[in-house]
Length: 496
Image (tube, rainbow, N blue to C red; front, side, top):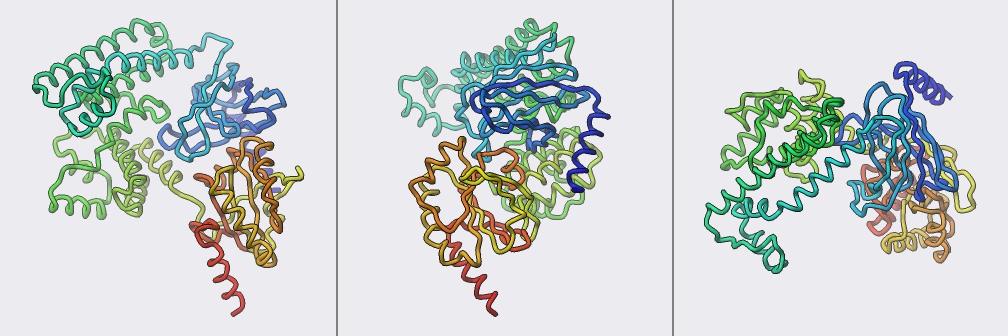
């Protein structure tokens, strides 16, 4: 009850303080009869999405949302396995149509970025101009890829040789890896000259919009910064520090590229050991930054952001210890003078944090194969094993194994299998031939909120709780990974 009161109070206070609503009218096959969530985020790097509104689309895929906001915001619409992004302003109405799926999967392996048609009922041209800027950038890279590759070929001759072998007729490999170094220099000059032409062209094309909206001008500038970095002629930090905006996806693109090798300096063994020791003992970010850039003028706010982005990259590549990386992020969050650094460090910490052992699993409600409601907290009468599956072959093997185990363990373990399919029909098609018994079969529908709350990274996935609904493992083994052995250990302990 208190949770519901808190939600109502939050929505009321948010509306009071934000004041003005954005109206989103949407449609698309993917949203048909599905929940649609509107989300904001603190930054474009971690994209920890916070749900601010939700609704359910009708059978035609039509829906409408009203979202309170007091400034321009990057809004994410999430429905089933689809996600689109648009920029919205207060008091505006946007018409959104989900189009064909983009096959590029995001990090969690479930939510896909879909293309969308976005219309607006006023003079707000933010989304249209961003689309046009992106088109100009894509066209530029297509037309200048030869010079770009040539200007970088001397840095990795092995990669160039492989490209020549794989694509012998491609225009990108006309040059030889043994060409005179002056050719490389010439290619870089040509590439930079074309970047300057592009910059002038965009200024000419979008000058009226840039004057009306500094965000659009900053977006275009950061795209140019990224191109210059690709051409090994980066803008100086003094210039880049004037464009800091964690919600600007173009700034984030530049930030990630600038951070790509930041924590991988070319050090001899002795210096590398000293650097590792420094990271383990530093009380602030400043000595780490100074060690990496002793000649830097120190634009501390920007350099801290680059360091955080580099730490995040190395967390996923395991280039450094995750424990060490988390320590440095925590230190930045508590000691930095800049709100942007604290905000981004905290966002990374949230991104890295999964459900911890002995933490309470968030409550959720799904439907079973009979289309009846099933609530998690109403079924915590014993150990519960939650297995999330789709139509994949590995999932079918796991389901067969669980089905074999279900009868033996049914008095000690409640086995719940949850289909993360795009449609109920595909869910039914997967389970129909398996004849699953002694377990509960639910439909999760690839629901965005469910994946957010339970930190589901990829399917298949499993969670195990005890009779209090507390998580029992940091990582729950899948059936094929020996969960039966874990269950036997639990039963032996219970008999003692």
